[in-house]
Length: 97
Length: 241
Image (cartoon, rainbow over all chains, first blue to last red; front, side):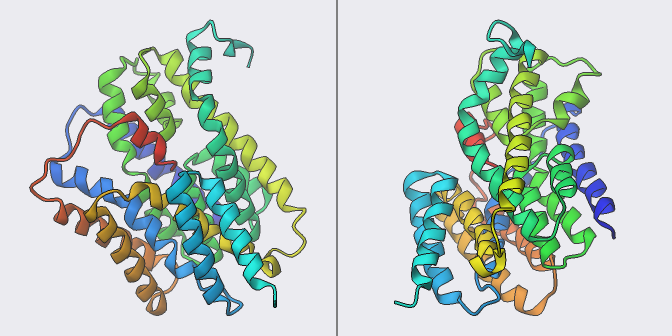
């Protein structure tokens, strides 16, 4: 599938989700409301671990950087702080001391 | 944005969201830098911000493009991530009396952040809703453009390890969402499952399977506790997605 066909699909499912709720007056069953609550947690976690390894064999320092970033995210709740702190730790650990 | 004065309903909505710009700018910039690293052109990167306008779905999509995922996998992951907007639509439809032709417009620009601000505000007009929504749309797209152009200054993204921004961004999005034992269990299980599946399966399939499996696990673990249907404004705003 080409890039633009993929984009068209993304637009359709995103707009569809946003519009369907607005025009319908029904309630979702409890189970699915709870399911939807956990979707961002499950998907975000699955977008972290497979991408930590990297292609340059630096998984050790990348995991260390991500751990410090998680701590920063927990303390500050600011996305940019977590990214900046994580990258800073990564670049520091890269230096052959 | 001449109509964005504080005296109009649109203007009040526009400025009601402005405090969230601070969080949107680095997120949009990080998305654009990752998209550039994944080989997307400026037009393609910006088109996603204009047409899809969903931060975490766009971010995961460019990561999946880079990983060589199939288009269908990317579309299904987008659906999984964005289907919760159904809940915001349901709540917004109850709260704000929208005319038939206003609904598709209000729906197209509906996001977590906008819903959070509207839920916390007292105003309930279409103009106010649109002001809130377009405030985020404008800043998200400006941040995308700025991030992509700034990415040109990075000489060798791979050498610098800029691909690490992707998992770091999702660590930062994930951590504030984890507050209960069930949420922690789902986060850790999903992380481990996706890691394992990624060794065996190509492209976006590990994320899709883990997303469904992890959410089912969470729904199962919290069975018996009635879901909180009153979506709190701070929660929605925190789920910067």
